[in-house]
Amino acid sequence: MHGPARPTSCAPRQLRAPAAARPGSCAPRPLGPTHTTSDRDPLKFAPDGSLMLYLQPDSPGAEKEPNRLPGPASGGVAMTMRVSAPKPQVRDGRWAPPAVRKAA
Image (cartoon, rainbow, N blue to C red; front, side):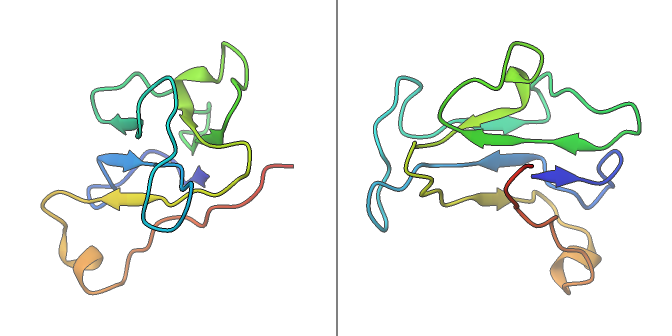
């Protein structure tokens, strides 16, 4: 998932990516059933201020590991974005999270 330059005041503070073993359940992993990022995690931003998150089973390498949300090898992921105290543009739909897409 690639997001725009530094999140705005309406951007999410927490992302969760539980791996779906079957609809409505989580697949077991060494890190537990879910792995979460939050505003307290040391995410690495690109020089232009944008943020790339990696949803994948294996490490993308030491440099990118802080931005990894572990996922199953099957690719079945259900992603939840929690926005605390959302601004009006989030509530009324003027702001939407960036699309999740397969990296090249």
